[in-house]
Length: 179
Ligand code: 5GP
Ligand code: MG
Ligand code: MG
Image 1 (cartoon, rainbow, N blue to C red):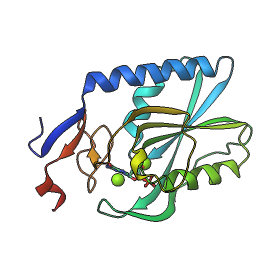
Image 2: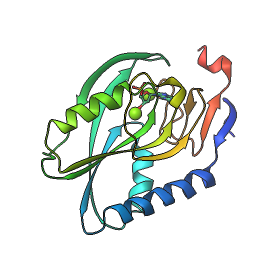
Image 3: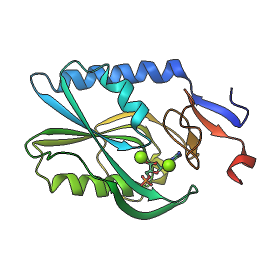
């Protein structure tokens, strides 16, 4: 275990098993279609990479980078597009892939933004959900795990850009968050 980690919330096996289930579910739901997975950088990168390997229908991916958080752990409520999609999503079956839904502000923005581009359908897939902190309602179609209100890192999620490479989802020791 990494020395900065206080506790592991979800270990590798647990995550792998659930990601495999989500891939199977998506495969069933999109029989005969093709999917465009839109990953939200950078947090959803590892989740998307693992998830698509369990999807057995034709799958494309594209990425968007947005910023909603500053350097710390407090939501600013401001969403900025740092990198837009490469191609049009008009007429496509789109799944937005997120790392975590917290207040829901980022996702609400993404959903409105994507809808205005005329996809054939739009669904949301998130690895983690922190329902206790929700400020705006967003419809989540595929959720990996609901977790308590704690700031987590690993499996793509960062604290000040660190810890994304941890293979599990963990909470850091309090002294690390204080910086
Ligand atoms: P929301 O707009 O839903 O409040 O926040 C969404 C974004 O905030 C997530 O995509 C993620 O980047 C970041 N975020 C929210 N909660 C956490 C957390 O517990 N850990 C980390 N590393 N990022 C989080
Ligand atoms: Mg995110
Ligand atoms: Mg972050």
